[in-house]
Amino acid sequence: MSDPLGFLYEPDPAVMRAGLVAELAHRIGAAQIDPDIAYLTSSRLVPSPFARVFAIEAALPFGLKRLREWLCARGVGQVVIKKRGSPLEPRELEHALRLRGEASRTLFLTHVRGEPYVLVGEPADPRA
Image (tube, rainbow, N blue to C red; front, side, top):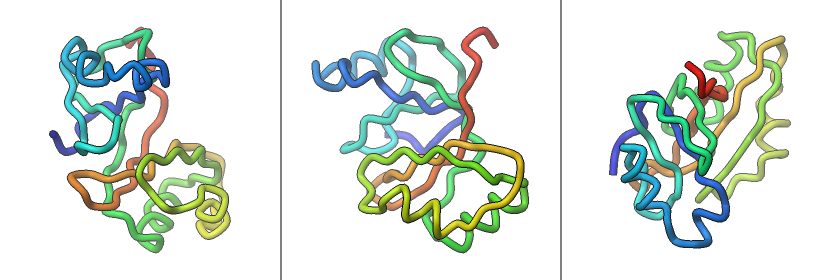
């Protein structure tokens, strides 16, 4: 297990169904952020056809006020919300955030070592 590092890997659903998340982690030099969640993290970008990669800008213990302040300070007005292991509904959270701005980010509602977290990121360019 690892705290979130610079990159988050979202394994393809076929990898998860086949039970190959640990194998993918080994091949790309990544670690899971929680034993029950299939998100992987690494400090370096390793493109893979078996996972989408996101550059992580922030890893915050979940709190609506803190998240709203963080996003507003960066002019974020549009979010894509993904979740694994979170009871929150993406549409309800997006409404509660009341965002305005031009920037966009991807939010990952998840657990890190059993605690509710939100990871904020953007798709990483695999050619970088």
